[in-house]
Length: 240
Image (cartoon, one colour):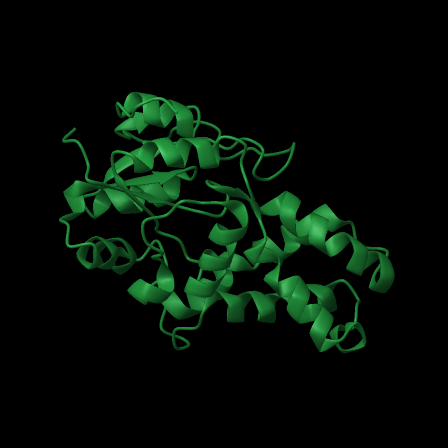
């Protein structure tokens, strides 16, 4: 493997713990408005609509829309499916809950590992999140990105090739000079098909205690690391 110049990170699940964060922010709202809904089950149901919503854009059945917009539509749909009335909850409360995706916490190793990796490489998200979401998340969580990139910048949702290739081009780099870092084998397979190097970092708690997928590498990834600090070690980054 040629040493990459830029490390590009999946965010939801790889850098931040979306399930715990969504459940935390949803809990008081659900307790008041829909007490029959378990916060973690609610987070899972909301996330389950993530890929189908993006597929409408990827397939050309609707124009490109920011992830904040898709999340907001999905939020109301999940509430209706559960027998809750979004109108009764109120627009201000729904808007606040939708921004829970902006307030997610990083995994315990994420910030320390990113700081070490940043000392040697350009680091940036290659996420399906929109710019405001990723910027607000980074400010709150202390994620030390060199740039905020993602679907809104590339105008394409992963795993479309354009998402990877346009991001590399925006950085002025060839795909082979970029390494995709993700906890999802499918993301890495799509990046590898576009010529990017790949690093797998498992997050076995992403989907809770019953997680059955992405527990181990499922492809010939260039690096398999236990966490971001181990990834920094494997890439020869100086200690903290």
